[in-house]
Length: 424
Image (tube, rainbow, N blue to C red; front, side, top):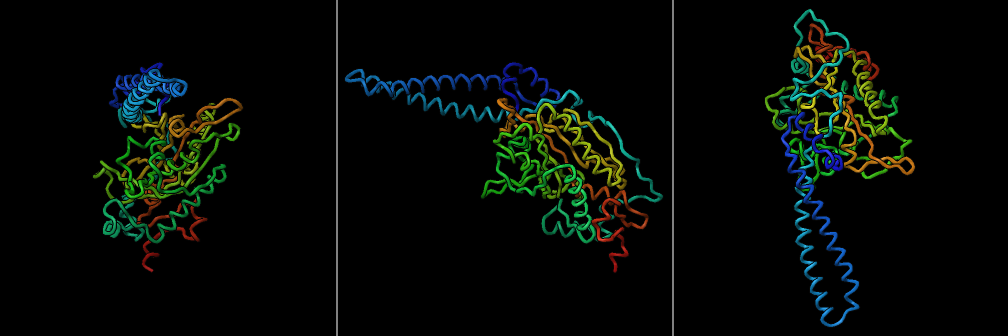
């Protein structure tokens, strides 16, 4: 949620941000809604004050004066009911309107209307060279019997997949590898709930803007998470955090669910854009004075994880038209996929300043000083997409897949996934 006091003082700042993001939000409607709401609250408070005074004076009155005051009290009650109904309607419109406003982007976030405005900041490593035409992860996985789309589609429909055999071991090797790094970095590990209340989705900033992307359980009015950022962000909702305890660092492994509404026909097949996937997420609650330093450190941890896997990647500074509503800044880490001959997003790292904290009422206290914390999050490992990168970058001319050195300690002596092994 945006800072309403700042909006009242300088709505032009938000108008400019909305234009930079290519959004269609009528600022004048927001100004008028805010004015009506505040005026109505003042009128209601005035009537309530009159009602309180009248309730104290009526018992001491007699005769006509008492009857007149009682009659006036009834009129006040009727006016209050009407105004409170009107206020409820305005507040609903107010929340719906201002919930669509984006966070204010950081000065280092490039302006741009879409992905064409993104800026590549750095590269790590070199593209792998092959003396054969590399296969994509779908063909590799199918031929090695570690990926099964057909049977998943039979059971669940498109955009679902079975991981099989060595791929299952490889997933949990990845998880162990990443969790060991995060433990050493001081992160508290969590296994979060996968079903959350609507307030958690709203508080994180995914609702109402992305509501169509998430699955809902109708009977219980709960939502399946699309990232463990949601329960991690809500973990300290409505709490005061001690200033000297910051930063608080959490990491969670979870299965995630996304409808991918509107994306049909894009990357259809394999593990890239599926409805169900596993992910390890990092989340930090930071003091505002040190949050940007923490944010760059968070990106460094992400890069350390991917560097350890020996993957070639680039860091992209995402532009205003290609970042999420809560984001002030966002980096994407894009790995090179030889089978697609393209860079594809493997992870993202976002700084949301006080946007989420304001919605979820998460503050720090330092003596008498109290203020909103800053929040930030980053993928530590999107398991499916990382498996794609491993399959395609570590393949050989026979269609086998070597195990990255960093994962060997978790593979029970296995060094290669091969067709010969499958046929035994």
